[in-house]
Length: 451
Image (cartoon, rainbow, N blue to C red; front, side, top):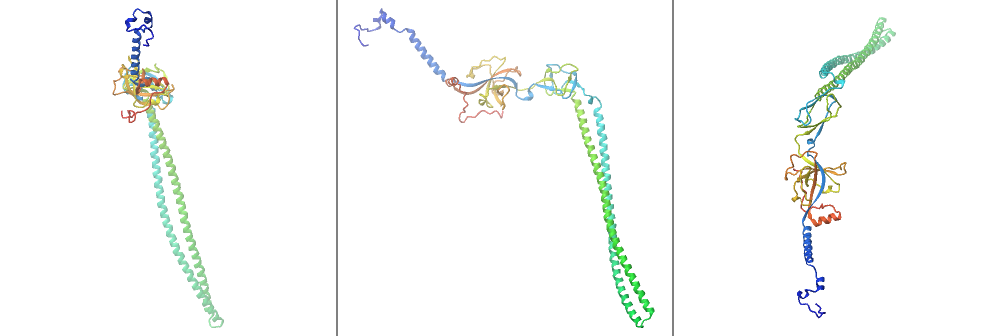
């Protein structure tokens, strides 16, 4: 107090009855409001440090984990006419049960004994193959006989050539002997003629020597003729050898050509047999396609081509079936912006259509009616809706999914990310930042590959 006024106030009782102090004094509720603000501020600070689980929301639908467990359509393998239905929609069937019977509509397969007739053609062609095999064997035997005959002929001609060579040598020696005899006769003739001219030898002796000279000349001419004849015979034998070799070579070549032609016909027959066998097996196999059977245990969902007498084309859908044994999963679609935050093994919570659930975003521990899942696969390509498909299987460590859950139902997926303070999360949302993708040092992303 400045003690400006002479009226000194010692206590609040002195202010009783005065109007100015009553108008300037603070109200009692002002102090209560201040306490309330302090309490609210304290609560706000307390909530800012509460843990908050970041998450990603994505819509999806219930499906199966394996492709063969999903609803499938059974198609007609062949074109045919529906003759009889053995099942009704909603009926349970076992693997191999007959669903519908088709009759043939193509004229090429009307013959009821088509398989047997094609089998007879196969047997006939098989007999032709055996005949060709026998002919090939006969030709090979004929070629072997020709080769043996050629060897015998060549051996005979070689003997003749050897004899001709000996005869040529003998005749050549005779020519030499005849030449020596001619020289002797010429000397005797010359000496006798000189003596005859001198009158020492008689005419008779002279004529005798001249006769011997003529005989010697005749002998040498004959010896030379025989020598030339022997040489010509030797050449004839050699020519005969070449002609014989060429003749039998032509015969063997012709037989070999016939053998190859027979083998070609045999191979053509074998190709025809294989083709006929394929046709026979195809016809026999086609007859089994008249009955459309269940590929696995399941339930008949819908007859796509109902009625009797309906014509179905090859590959046309006939009936759809739901497998009996399956493992549920959820395929959900996430935005490309959120895809880097999803990895195999990431935990996901689901709210299924038809099951009441209470989910408090950020605090999954206090949520009710949700079911856990684990990411098992992420598509590499974007879907037609502009999002990426993520396949999530039930979490074995969590509560089992409802037994009444059916494929095709809707599901709301919440992928759980990192735990951060609530204040940080609000700051992130206000600034438009994505959820944290940072990993703590030494902490690995869960891997469900072994699972």
